[in-house]
Length: 401
Image 1 (cartoon, rainbow, N blue to C red):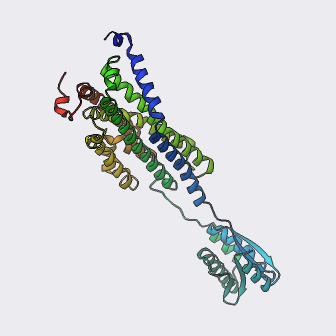
Image 2: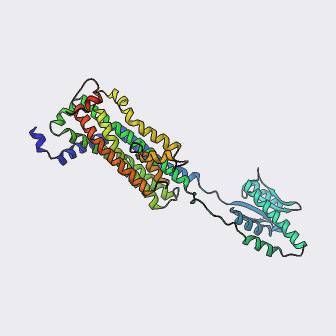
Image 3: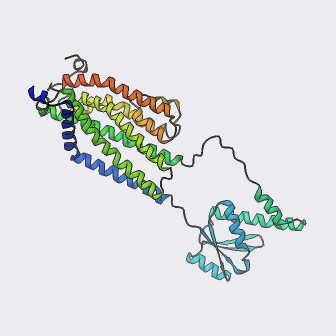
Protein backbone atom coordinates (compact mmCIF):
# COMPACT_ATOMS: atom_id res chain seq x y z
CA UNK A 1 0.00 0.00 0.00
CA UNK A 2 2.91 2.33 0.76
CA UNK A 3 4.37 1.86 -2.73
CA UNK A 4 1.06 2.79 -4.28
CA UNK A 5 0.87 6.03 -2.36
CA UNK A 6 4.39 7.00 -3.40
CA UNK A 7 3.47 6.95 -7.11
CA UNK A 8 1.63 10.02 -8.34
CA UNK A 9 -1.48 9.66 -10.47
CA UNK A 10 0.11 11.03 -13.64
CA UNK A 11 3.27 8.96 -13.18
CA UNK A 12 1.27 5.79 -12.52
CA UNK A 13 -0.87 6.21 -15.62
CA UNK A 14 2.20 7.11 -17.69
CA UNK A 15 4.10 4.02 -16.56
CA UNK A 16 1.18 1.71 -17.39
CA UNK A 17 0.59 3.39 -20.76
CA UNK A 18 4.29 3.18 -21.68
CA UNK A 19 4.46 -0.47 -20.70
CA UNK A 20 1.33 -1.27 -22.70
CA UNK A 21 2.60 0.54 -25.78
CA UNK A 22 6.04 -1.11 -25.67
CA UNK A 23 4.57 -4.58 -25.30
CA UNK A 24 1.83 -4.28 -27.91
CA UNK A 25 3.80 -2.42 -30.57
CA UNK A 26 6.13 -5.40 -30.94
CA UNK A 27 3.33 -7.92 -31.43
CA UNK A 28 3.23 -9.71 -34.77
CA UNK A 29 -0.50 -9.08 -35.20
CA UNK A 30 -0.07 -5.31 -34.94
CA UNK A 31 2.97 -5.19 -37.22
CA UNK A 32 1.29 -7.36 -39.86
CA UNK A 33 -1.89 -5.31 -39.84
CA UNK A 34 0.09 -2.06 -39.98
CA UNK A 35 2.10 -3.37 -42.95
CA UNK A 36 -1.02 -4.58 -44.78
CA UNK A 37 -2.95 -1.33 -44.30
CA UNK A 38 0.11 0.73 -45.20
CA UNK A 39 0.68 -1.18 -48.44
CA UNK A 40 -3.03 -1.02 -49.27
CA UNK A 41 -3.08 2.73 -48.64
CA UNK A 42 -0.22 3.22 -51.10
CA UNK A 43 -1.59 0.75 -53.65
CA UNK A 44 -5.13 2.15 -53.85
CA UNK A 45 -4.26 5.63 -55.20
CA UNK A 46 -1.70 4.07 -57.55
CA UNK A 47 -4.35 1.73 -58.95
CA UNK A 48 -6.78 4.64 -59.42
CA UNK A 49 -4.02 6.70 -61.02
CA UNK A 50 -3.04 4.12 -63.61
CA UNK A 51 -6.63 3.03 -64.21
CA UNK A 52 -7.67 6.61 -64.96
CA UNK A 53 -4.74 7.54 -67.19
CA UNK A 54 -6.11 9.47 -70.14
CA UNK A 55 -5.40 7.65 -73.41
CA UNK A 56 -3.34 9.41 -76.04
CA UNK A 57 -4.93 11.23 -78.97
CA UNK A 58 -6.38 9.22 -81.83
CA UNK A 59 -4.12 9.28 -84.89
CA UNK A 60 -5.82 9.96 -88.22
CA UNK A 61 -4.16 10.02 -91.63
CA UNK A 62 -5.55 11.86 -94.68
CA UNK A 63 -4.24 11.59 -98.24
CA UNK A 64 -2.56 14.59 -99.83
CA UNK A 65 -5.45 15.32 -102.19
CA UNK A 66 -7.80 15.50 -99.16
CA UNK A 67 -5.55 17.84 -97.14
CA UNK A 68 -8.49 20.19 -96.51
CA UNK A 69 -10.22 17.37 -94.61
CA UNK A 70 -7.64 17.60 -91.81
CA UNK A 71 -8.61 21.07 -90.46
CA UNK A 72 -12.29 20.15 -90.57
CA UNK A 73 -11.64 17.02 -88.52
CA UNK A 74 -9.51 18.91 -85.98
CA UNK A 75 -12.04 21.73 -85.55
CA UNK A 76 -14.96 19.36 -85.12
CA UNK A 77 -13.00 17.11 -82.73
CA UNK A 78 -12.27 20.15 -80.55
CA UNK A 79 -15.99 20.98 -80.42
CA UNK A 80 -16.80 17.38 -79.45
CA UNK A 81 -14.08 17.25 -76.79
CA UNK A 82 -12.07 14.59 -78.64
CA UNK A 83 -8.29 14.50 -78.93
CA UNK A 84 -6.92 13.68 -82.37
CA UNK A 85 -3.80 14.24 -84.43
CA UNK A 86 -3.97 14.46 -88.21
CA UNK A 87 -1.08 13.57 -90.52
CA UNK A 88 -0.88 13.65 -94.31
CA UNK A 89 0.16 10.69 -96.47
CA UNK A 90 0.97 10.86 -100.18
CA UNK A 91 -1.54 8.24 -101.33
CA UNK A 92 -4.08 5.62 -100.33
CA UNK A 93 -1.61 2.71 -100.29
CA UNK A 94 0.73 4.50 -97.89
CA UNK A 95 -2.17 5.29 -95.59
CA UNK A 96 -3.30 1.65 -95.57
CA UNK A 97 0.24 0.52 -94.72
CA UNK A 98 0.38 2.93 -91.78
CA UNK A 99 -2.96 1.67 -90.48
CA UNK A 100 -1.82 -1.94 -90.82
CA UNK A 101 1.46 -1.23 -88.98
CA UNK A 102 -0.29 0.69 -86.20
CA UNK A 103 1.32 4.05 -86.94
CA UNK A 104 -2.14 5.58 -87.30
CA UNK A 105 -5.53 4.42 -86.10
CA UNK A 106 -7.58 5.41 -89.14
CA UNK A 107 -7.16 6.49 -92.75
CA UNK A 108 -9.86 9.05 -93.63
CA UNK A 109 -10.67 9.84 -97.25
CA UNK A 110 -13.41 11.88 -98.90
CA UNK A 111 -15.94 9.90 -100.91
CA UNK A 112 -19.13 10.57 -102.85
CA UNK A 113 -21.26 9.37 -99.92
CA UNK A 114 -19.09 10.86 -97.18
CA UNK A 115 -15.85 9.98 -95.39
CA UNK A 116 -14.40 6.54 -96.06
CA UNK A 117 -12.53 5.16 -93.06
CA UNK A 118 -9.93 2.39 -93.19
CA UNK A 119 -9.21 0.70 -89.88
CA UNK A 120 -7.56 -2.50 -88.66
CA UNK A 121 -10.63 -3.96 -86.95
CA UNK A 122 -13.45 -1.68 -85.84
CA UNK A 123 -14.19 2.01 -86.08
CA UNK A 124 -14.51 3.38 -82.55
CA UNK A 125 -17.72 5.09 -81.52
CA UNK A 126 -16.07 8.52 -80.96
CA UNK A 127 -14.48 8.43 -84.45
CA UNK A 128 -17.76 7.31 -85.98
CA UNK A 129 -19.44 10.28 -84.32
CA UNK A 130 -16.67 12.63 -85.50
CA UNK A 131 -16.85 11.51 -89.12
CA UNK A 132 -20.66 11.67 -89.11
CA UNK A 133 -20.68 15.26 -87.82
CA UNK A 134 -18.07 16.33 -90.40
CA UNK A 135 -20.09 14.71 -93.19
CA UNK A 136 -23.25 16.47 -92.01
CA UNK A 137 -21.46 19.82 -91.85
CA UNK A 138 -20.06 19.31 -95.33
CA UNK A 139 -23.46 18.42 -96.74
CA UNK A 140 -25.05 21.42 -95.01
CA UNK A 141 -22.39 23.77 -96.37
CA UNK A 142 -23.02 22.53 -99.91
CA UNK A 143 -26.74 23.12 -99.60
CA UNK A 144 -26.20 26.63 -98.18
CA UNK A 145 -23.88 27.48 -101.09
CA UNK A 146 -26.43 26.24 -103.63
CA UNK A 147 -29.06 28.46 -102.02
CA UNK A 148 -26.76 31.50 -102.29
CA UNK A 149 -25.80 31.70 -98.60
CA UNK A 150 -22.44 31.99 -96.92
CA UNK A 151 -21.47 28.69 -95.15
CA UNK A 152 -18.77 30.42 -93.06
CA UNK A 153 -21.28 32.94 -91.70
CA UNK A 154 -23.71 30.16 -90.84
CA UNK A 155 -20.97 28.18 -89.06
CA UNK A 156 -20.03 31.24 -86.98
CA UNK A 157 -23.65 31.76 -85.98
CA UNK A 158 -24.05 28.11 -85.07
CA UNK A 159 -20.78 28.07 -83.14
CA UNK A 160 -21.80 31.16 -81.13
CA UNK A 161 -24.92 29.46 -79.77
CA UNK A 162 -24.35 27.64 -76.48
CA UNK A 163 -26.48 25.77 -74.00
CA UNK A 164 -27.28 27.72 -70.83
CA UNK A 165 -27.10 25.40 -67.80
CA UNK A 166 -28.61 26.10 -64.38
CA UNK A 167 -27.23 23.64 -61.81
CA UNK A 168 -29.56 22.89 -58.90
CA UNK A 169 -26.82 21.04 -57.05
CA UNK A 170 -23.09 21.55 -56.70
CA UNK A 171 -20.71 19.97 -59.15
CA UNK A 172 -20.40 16.25 -58.43
CA UNK A 173 -17.38 15.56 -60.66
CA UNK A 174 -15.36 14.70 -57.54
CA UNK A 175 -18.10 12.69 -55.84
CA UNK A 176 -16.44 9.39 -56.77
CA UNK A 177 -13.24 10.39 -55.01
CA UNK A 178 -15.15 11.65 -51.98
CA UNK A 179 -17.05 8.36 -51.75
CA UNK A 180 -13.80 6.36 -52.04
CA UNK A 181 -12.12 8.46 -49.35
CA UNK A 182 -15.19 8.22 -47.11
CA UNK A 183 -15.37 4.44 -47.38
CA UNK A 184 -11.62 4.10 -46.83
CA UNK A 185 -11.74 6.33 -43.73
CA UNK A 186 -14.71 4.39 -42.33
CA UNK A 187 -13.01 1.06 -43.01
CA UNK A 188 -9.82 2.15 -41.26
CA UNK A 189 -11.78 3.43 -38.28
CA UNK A 190 -13.89 0.29 -38.11
CA UNK A 191 -10.89 -2.04 -38.36
CA UNK A 192 -8.80 -0.02 -35.90
CA UNK A 193 -11.52 0.25 -33.26
CA UNK A 194 -12.31 -3.45 -33.54
CA UNK A 195 -8.66 -4.55 -33.53
CA UNK A 196 -7.44 -2.25 -30.77
CA UNK A 197 -10.55 -2.92 -28.71
CA UNK A 198 -9.85 -6.64 -28.90
CA UNK A 199 -6.27 -5.97 -27.80
CA UNK A 200 -7.50 -4.07 -24.74
CA UNK A 201 -9.83 -6.88 -23.69
CA UNK A 202 -7.36 -9.67 -24.44
CA UNK A 203 -4.59 -7.86 -22.57
CA UNK A 204 -6.73 -7.56 -19.47
CA UNK A 205 -7.71 -11.23 -19.62
CA UNK A 206 -4.07 -12.20 -20.16
CA UNK A 207 -2.90 -10.25 -17.11
CA UNK A 208 -5.83 -11.54 -15.08
CA UNK A 209 -5.23 -15.21 -15.94
CA UNK A 210 -1.47 -14.92 -15.26
CA UNK A 211 -2.15 -13.00 -12.03
CA UNK A 212 0.12 -10.17 -13.20
CA UNK A 213 -2.72 -7.79 -12.45
CA UNK A 214 -2.36 -8.51 -8.76
CA UNK A 215 1.24 -7.26 -8.83
CA UNK A 216 0.24 -4.18 -10.82
CA UNK A 217 -2.59 -3.33 -8.45
CA UNK A 218 -0.17 -3.45 -5.54
CA UNK A 219 1.47 -0.34 -7.00
CA UNK A 220 -1.35 1.51 -8.77
CA UNK A 221 -5.07 1.97 -8.27
CA UNK A 222 -7.53 0.05 -10.48
CA UNK A 223 -8.71 3.17 -12.31
CA UNK A 224 -5.10 4.22 -12.95
CA UNK A 225 -4.32 0.81 -14.40
CA UNK A 226 -7.42 0.98 -16.59
CA UNK A 227 -6.61 4.51 -17.76
CA UNK A 228 -3.01 3.61 -18.54
CA UNK A 229 -3.98 0.55 -20.57
CA UNK A 230 -6.57 2.54 -22.53
CA UNK A 231 -4.14 5.37 -23.28
CA UNK A 232 -1.30 3.02 -24.27
CA UNK A 233 -3.38 0.96 -26.67
CA UNK A 234 -5.04 4.17 -27.88
CA UNK A 235 -1.69 5.50 -29.06
CA UNK A 236 -1.12 2.17 -30.77
CA UNK A 237 -4.40 2.52 -32.64
CA UNK A 238 -3.55 6.11 -33.53
CA UNK A 239 -0.43 4.84 -35.30
CA UNK A 240 -2.52 2.18 -37.01
CA UNK A 241 -4.78 4.91 -38.38
CA UNK A 242 -2.27 7.69 -38.98
CA UNK A 243 0.32 5.75 -41.02
CA UNK A 244 -2.01 4.48 -43.80
CA UNK A 245 -3.98 7.74 -43.75
CA UNK A 246 -0.92 9.92 -44.36
CA UNK A 247 0.56 7.48 -46.90
CA UNK A 248 -2.70 7.20 -48.84
CA UNK A 249 -3.37 10.94 -49.02
CA UNK A 250 0.28 11.72 -49.79
CA UNK A 251 0.53 9.24 -52.67
CA UNK A 252 -2.92 10.24 -53.94
CA UNK A 253 -2.02 13.93 -54.09
CA UNK A 254 1.43 13.22 -55.57
CA UNK A 255 0.08 11.04 -58.40
CA UNK A 256 -3.00 13.14 -59.06
CA UNK A 257 -5.31 10.25 -58.20
CA UNK A 258 -6.81 12.63 -55.63
CA UNK A 259 -7.59 16.01 -57.18
CA UNK A 260 -9.40 17.38 -54.15
CA UNK A 261 -7.87 20.42 -52.48
CA UNK A 262 -5.05 19.87 -50.00
CA UNK A 263 -7.16 21.40 -47.26
CA UNK A 264 -10.06 19.04 -47.97
CA UNK A 265 -7.80 15.97 -48.02
CA UNK A 266 -5.89 16.89 -44.86
CA UNK A 267 -9.14 17.91 -43.19
CA UNK A 268 -10.62 14.47 -43.84
CA UNK A 269 -7.61 12.78 -42.22
CA UNK A 270 -7.68 15.21 -39.29
CA UNK A 271 -11.38 14.59 -38.63
CA UNK A 272 -10.80 10.84 -38.88
CA UNK A 273 -8.13 11.11 -36.17
CA UNK A 274 -10.42 13.22 -33.99
CA UNK A 275 -13.21 10.69 -34.33
CA UNK A 276 -10.82 7.83 -33.64
CA UNK A 277 -9.85 9.43 -30.33
CA UNK A 278 -13.51 9.98 -29.43
CA UNK A 279 -14.55 6.52 -30.60
CA UNK A 280 -11.68 4.75 -28.88
CA UNK A 281 -12.37 6.57 -25.64
CA UNK A 282 -15.91 5.26 -25.86
CA UNK A 283 -15.30 1.67 -26.96
CA UNK A 284 -12.04 0.99 -25.11
CA UNK A 285 -13.72 1.58 -21.78
CA UNK A 286 -16.50 -0.86 -22.66
CA UNK A 287 -14.07 -3.48 -24.03
CA UNK A 288 -11.83 -3.18 -20.97
CA UNK A 289 -14.71 -3.48 -18.53
CA UNK A 290 -16.24 -6.47 -20.31
CA UNK A 291 -12.83 -8.15 -20.64
CA UNK A 292 -12.36 -7.91 -16.89
CA UNK A 293 -15.48 -10.04 -16.30
CA UNK A 294 -13.93 -13.20 -17.85
CA UNK A 295 -10.77 -15.15 -17.13
CA UNK A 296 -10.21 -17.09 -20.36
CA UNK A 297 -9.26 -15.86 -23.83
CA UNK A 298 -11.87 -18.19 -25.31
CA UNK A 299 -14.62 -16.17 -23.65
CA UNK A 300 -13.51 -12.77 -24.96
CA UNK A 301 -15.30 -12.97 -28.32
CA UNK A 302 -18.65 -13.84 -26.83
CA UNK A 303 -18.58 -11.21 -24.11
CA UNK A 304 -17.58 -8.44 -26.56
CA UNK A 305 -20.25 -9.06 -29.20
CA UNK A 306 -22.87 -6.70 -27.66
CA UNK A 307 -20.26 -3.93 -27.66
CA UNK A 308 -19.16 -4.56 -31.26
CA UNK A 309 -22.73 -4.76 -32.61
CA UNK A 310 -23.08 -0.94 -32.98
CA UNK A 311 -19.77 -0.83 -34.86
CA UNK A 312 -20.95 -3.56 -37.23
CA UNK A 313 -24.27 -1.75 -37.74
CA UNK A 314 -22.46 1.52 -38.47
CA UNK A 315 -20.19 -0.17 -41.01
CA UNK A 316 -23.13 -1.86 -42.79
CA UNK A 317 -25.03 1.43 -43.00
CA UNK A 318 -21.83 3.19 -44.01
CA UNK A 319 -21.25 1.07 -47.10
CA UNK A 320 -24.89 0.58 -48.09
CA UNK A 321 -26.63 3.89 -47.35
CA UNK A 322 -24.14 6.74 -46.93
CA UNK A 323 -22.42 6.61 -50.38
CA UNK A 324 -25.77 6.80 -52.19
CA UNK A 325 -27.56 9.21 -49.85
CA UNK A 326 -25.46 10.74 -47.05
CA UNK A 327 -28.29 13.13 -46.18
CA UNK A 328 -30.86 10.40 -45.59
CA UNK A 329 -32.61 10.30 -42.23
CA UNK A 330 -31.00 6.94 -41.38
CA UNK A 331 -27.47 8.16 -42.12
CA UNK A 332 -27.97 11.50 -40.37
CA UNK A 333 -29.53 10.21 -37.14
CA UNK A 334 -27.20 7.23 -36.75
CA UNK A 335 -24.20 9.50 -37.33
CA UNK A 336 -25.43 11.64 -34.43
CA UNK A 337 -25.74 8.73 -31.99
CA UNK A 338 -22.50 8.07 -30.02
CA UNK A 339 -22.19 4.28 -30.67
CA UNK A 340 -22.35 4.74 -34.47
CA UNK A 341 -20.93 8.25 -34.81
CA UNK A 342 -17.18 7.31 -34.88
CA UNK A 343 -17.71 5.42 -38.16
CA UNK A 344 -20.56 7.27 -39.87
CA UNK A 345 -19.81 10.91 -39.10
CA UNK A 346 -16.29 10.84 -40.68
CA UNK A 347 -17.90 9.38 -43.82
CA UNK A 348 -20.42 12.21 -44.04
CA UNK A 349 -17.65 14.74 -43.36
CA UNK A 350 -15.52 13.29 -46.19
CA UNK A 351 -18.49 13.54 -48.56
CA UNK A 352 -19.18 17.13 -47.54
CA UNK A 353 -22.68 16.21 -46.33
CA UNK A 354 -22.38 16.99 -42.60
CA UNK A 355 -22.87 20.62 -41.53
CA UNK A 356 -20.58 21.84 -38.78
CA UNK A 357 -23.33 21.98 -36.14
CA UNK A 358 -24.08 18.28 -36.65
CA UNK A 359 -20.39 17.39 -36.39
CA UNK A 360 -19.89 19.37 -33.19
CA UNK A 361 -23.14 18.15 -31.62
CA UNK A 362 -22.34 14.53 -32.44
CA UNK A 363 -18.82 14.93 -31.04
CA UNK A 364 -20.16 16.52 -27.85
CA UNK A 365 -22.69 13.71 -27.40
CA UNK A 366 -19.97 11.09 -27.91
CA UNK A 367 -17.68 12.70 -25.34
CA UNK A 368 -20.54 13.08 -22.86
CA UNK A 369 -21.59 9.46 -23.38
CA UNK A 370 -17.98 8.37 -22.79
CA UNK A 371 -18.00 10.27 -19.52
CA UNK A 372 -21.11 8.40 -18.41
CA UNK A 373 -19.59 5.07 -19.45
CA UNK A 374 -16.40 5.87 -17.57
CA UNK A 375 -18.20 5.62 -14.24
CA UNK A 376 -19.80 2.28 -15.01
CA UNK A 377 -16.76 0.83 -16.78
CA UNK A 378 -14.51 1.77 -13.86
CA UNK A 379 -16.87 0.08 -11.43
CA UNK A 380 -17.10 -3.12 -13.52
CA UNK A 381 -13.32 -3.23 -13.90
CA UNK A 382 -12.66 -2.63 -10.20
CA UNK A 383 -15.15 -5.27 -9.06
CA UNK A 384 -14.14 -7.92 -11.62
CA UNK A 385 -10.43 -7.70 -12.42
CA UNK A 386 -9.27 -9.60 -9.32
CA UNK A 387 -11.91 -12.32 -9.58
CA UNK A 388 -10.91 -15.47 -11.44
CA UNK A 389 -12.86 -18.52 -12.50
CA UNK A 390 -16.40 -18.16 -13.82
CA UNK A 391 -17.60 -15.10 -15.69
CA UNK A 392 -18.70 -12.26 -13.43
CA UNK A 393 -22.32 -11.26 -14.17
CA UNK A 394 -22.68 -7.60 -15.14
CA UNK A 395 -25.32 -6.99 -12.50
CA UNK A 396 -22.94 -8.21 -9.82
CA UNK A 397 -19.99 -6.32 -11.32
CA UNK A 398 -21.96 -3.07 -11.29
CA UNK A 399 -22.65 -3.27 -7.57
CA UNK A 400 -20.73 -0.79 -5.48
CA UNK A 401 -17.67 -2.32 -3.87
